[in-house]
Amino acid sequence: MTKVCGSRLSVTGISFNRLYQPLLWLQENMPKEFSLFLAETRDLGEITVDQDIYFQCSTGGKLHYDIFTKMKKFNEKAVDKGLCSPMKFIFDYDDSIMDVGPDNPAYIFSGTEECIVEFGPYMKEPIKIEWIDKQTVKEVNGDNWIFNIERNKSLIKYTKQVKSFADALVCTTPYLAEKLKIDNPNVYVIPNAIDLSLYKNGVSTDDGIVRIGWAFSSSHWEDYFDILPALTEVINSRDDVELVLLTRDDTPTNELDMNKVEIYPYTSILDGYHKLMGKLNLDIGLAHLTDTEFNKCKSPLKFLEYSAIGAATLAPNILYNDYIEDGETGSIYNSHEEFKVKLNQLIDNKKLRKKLASNALTYVDTNYSIEKIAPLYLDMFKKVLG
Image 1: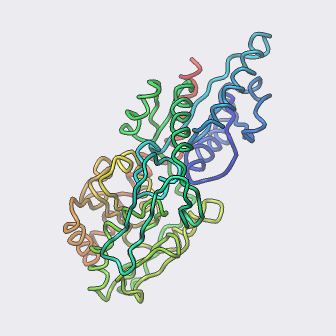
Image 2: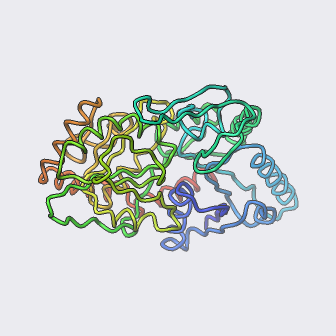
Image 3: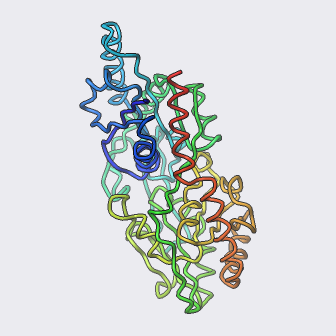
């Protein structure tokens, strides 16, 4: 029996995909081999005696480092008394905080240099963010925060120490694994899993209107504003399309014809994100990324989600060309011009859309289903325990 304690501080998209979903599946389907205990981080002293492994997502900063070192000392004392075996610490990461650029609102927590960023100079009212030390940056992710360079340097310093402290790290892709190995050589790669039962497969209305969707948070504003002119050109030039954005409701749309646009507030996992994705009835799903180091460290989760709801994915060669076979499981583009060509091609060719969506669903179900991915966690736990 492998006993794992996971943190239940909050249920975010990251913790749901990387902790709750796979580990709860293991507990339900492999109860003789695995048990899961979910605990608040601040109440973790005694569990170091009862559990084999402590597992947490997106750890970093001095607070986490102090908690983990105290837990380890507590465990070591219990081991000396013969009460338990040494507990192992495993931390999961789905991106690289070290590579967040100033175009990403998350720079508020990781940026170490002052600068000014202006989104979309072609826009009616360009968005400007001034990263000035100790000053308030308004409405970053919907809230006001203080940009503090010393705080951010401390966060990065202790995040590196947390990674070094761990017995093992786990992440979503081989590319990100190479980044993590700078701080800890013991890195496992386990892809994101998809539980198809959580999604409602989209239903085509056959009304001649092609629904094009994109789900993104404000951390992808750089990507959104980068492709917006090309996207606007396609949407505004056609009468047979609708653009569906699942994002912040104050996201600027610039020159987009709003008669063809629907905007749904980006919804949390707890508020029904999976069901909402299915209800959007998308024919095409967009997953644009700019060519940044941060984006190269991301995972192809949007491709998995679009496939789960029966939409054909249109994505850039950045990241996605390692996961999508162009013309078979999705459509890949190499430039903004090719984006417009391929988007128009998908709009015009229903047969192609259906083929890509069907092939992608089969591919995702075969390679990324929760039934296939969850047991990889148990294999990893056993290897770390030796």
